[in-house]
Length: 298
Length: 275
Image: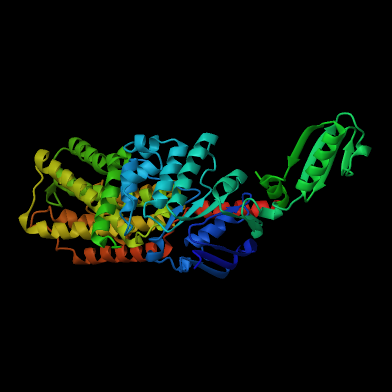
């Protein structure tokens, strides 16, 4: 059974449609990313699944529960890392984890958890003395203290510097090794690519593409670009006509780069010439994302 | 998988609020030391004269009055301000995402603040007895305890109500102070009421709950021959305020800041309007 199943989910605030009919499922052990620009509806969807918001229409099942009923046994099995939230400033890291851990029937040990999120040196420091990245890692610790089956991570690294992001990603990878199912939202392409098994790109409350990071938006079959410049020969003498010619520089678009490259390199060797600056590029996930979301990416 | 017992959770929750209270020196100062300071200053300024028509000394009047003020600060002011700030900071939203039942979270708050109120009251009365000759009357000790618990429970509920309706922590601070301080003057906490107060003042004082807490509490420190009858109607009225406040607080309680979800929503609205 799917851990999360969402069918034709809609949510409107007054006459503003925040979510306009979304479908997806998340299987056990999967890391699923909702990727989209700010205001696309990611947080609304996640907060409906967490039980914070009601829905306007559609069917939602999370671990077999209807999250809008806010049942205690549902909350015991999920872990939430909110996008905007904070932790009691006057308590120490250890005290906060102890306090929140006590409310769950099964829980991870405080010391073990402090190790997982890499806060050993700050275990007895007051929360107010932590850096932004350390606070976020503490929030991740609070999200998993109840040893949840499903973890919600809403923009876990927004506002992080690059090294803090890498550290956070390591923490999240550790969670996936524990077999946890994770629903992640992000507006960072590389985050989805690095962490997610599957990605749904969301824009204006709709899923505009869904797949693995490698196949998203038809990326696996999208046309490959081949570029090089001719040293001695004229473009007219090439065995295959290029898509574009700019002086000595030529460019091909192909769905079958293997055959094309074989033909071109075979020709070059035979002619005793070189293909200068030969490059073969597939469209990046970022290109696809920008295309799918009308270039709204931040 | 075994759920923790509700009593254990309530205890831990109270201990958590208790820790936060003492680690925020400003709240400890205004709850415990500020009323004490007023007591010492008032006793120094007014001397320890008899207030003839009440049949007690100044110190005997102010110790129970300011003990009540301290207890109300610990419950009403403390709960309303800290809860509203916890909502601003997203702590209430975080708690809402855990399996902790709402009644235990709020119950822990109330329990911790009642213990703090008890400490403030005991210190005030202790200082009164040690330095200002405050007299206790054995036959009123039991009623004193009852009045105390009914009073702090009612004002804890009122604190939750302020937290529920205040849009922000700053607003809750303003509401709590702007209601308690004037009411304390009107209800004869700071000023010894004249023998014949104006009718409107009496009406205001009678309507609001503070006078119904402070008067029966003070009556327990008045010699038997001067003591008014035990004010059961005061206690019933106080309890009524508490029950109504609790019902409204439960009805209107919000776990998320008004600007949080709403702000994100309006941002989304602007964005979709722009696109």
